[in-house]
Length: 218
Image (cartoon, rainbow, N blue to C red; front, side, top):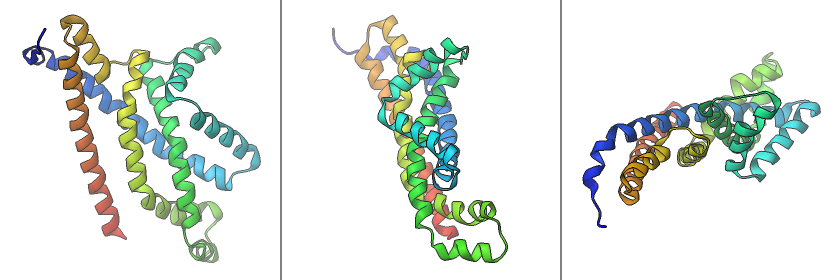
């Protein structure tokens, strides 16, 4: 049986819907990973030991286990303790927390790299510790880690395909549904790969523009 790409246009709507869900998952999980990374970093560096220990244990768990297992644990495991999350929400939480841990490591290193003189100067001007972190240290640290965090966002986009295993109708699962009806795996997996590539190009362009704006504001 030869290749027949003429069947792909008939399922454009299915693939477009899958691409839309992929973008939604990536954006929502990306926002969670960004702010979650900042919170984890601040707690790890400045929090009370009663907060630091759980955060470190959480980071060890999410960095030392496969993302797929984490998604299964959140979606299927939490049901046993009465927490029944929709597949989309479970996917966003799983991806967001997974990459929040990696973003936290980047932000911690960036916070420690901020000149201590700026911290001391802010305290001399009467800012509290929290105000100094919020207004002086963290903004500088976040600006410095935008490029490597951008790489994590690209990785998040690619890993979003894993949420198909818990039933989220993203791009990979949309392609699989088309394949189940047409028995044309090569054509639809290639079409899905092309969609991922286009989304990835758009994400990279947005990240480069953001980096230029940050560099111009310094």
